[in-house]
Length: 101
Image 1 (cartoon, rainbow, N blue to C red):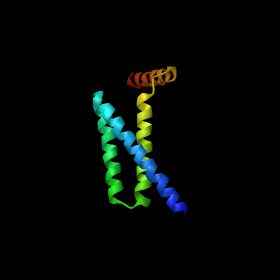
Image 2: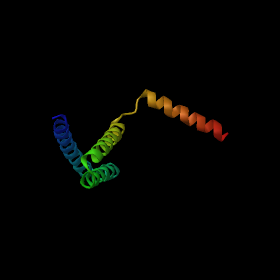
Image 3: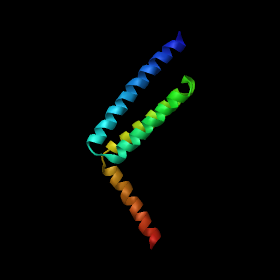
């Protein structure tokens, strides 16, 4: 029963995640965010290719990793600069200046 239970929830997760990524891609296209929508669409196609060409035991972890990578990239893209990142950027710029002189 555990295998069927896992398969059911993995399938539901995959369908919901895929639907969400499709809607997000459509939103990016409507907002004319070319690079983001191209990256999202490419990851979606890669996940679809893997799903259609491999057994469940193989495609499931690959698709989950793709989904997590997409979520990471989405999160980085929505992260607003703060004082911490300003300090980091200033430090890097000062290091570059020191090495150039």
